[in-house]
Image (cartoon, rainbow, N blue to C red; front, side):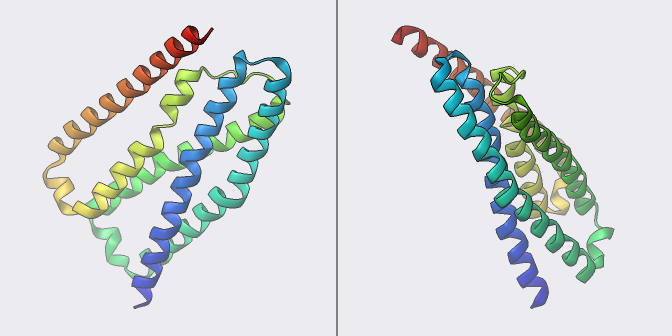
Length: 188
């Protein structure tokens, strides 16, 4: 029973953590979108986006990530057999990727504060593409946890499907960004 409760908490805080990460990188995109705005509007919006990013990071994303990680560690402690399964090692590998992405997000939150309303150096399209990394990691982790040993058995089909998914999402991001430019240019 305790394991099931911890697992439920792990899932709840995983959802909260990913919601925070998804929205955080979207805030970076919105911040970058202000590059073309009038100075007064740009200053106000950038102050707001910086405030929102810091609050989201400190109040939702990091606490949810910590609780998610603690619950995960407790589950490993309660079920040490997990460490003997190949699919779980794969999940942990994906979580290393998530940790690197988390660190990148943290550095961007700190950078927004340092900028004091100045331009974020990262290109808009790069931020939009980076916004999808958490989606990819979420797909990898969820499919690994649900399919377990089948992930190892059908690895090449899953990798092929994953690359198709990555390609489709990246092309969609580029298409949306291209259409956004066309719409913005036609409004003037």
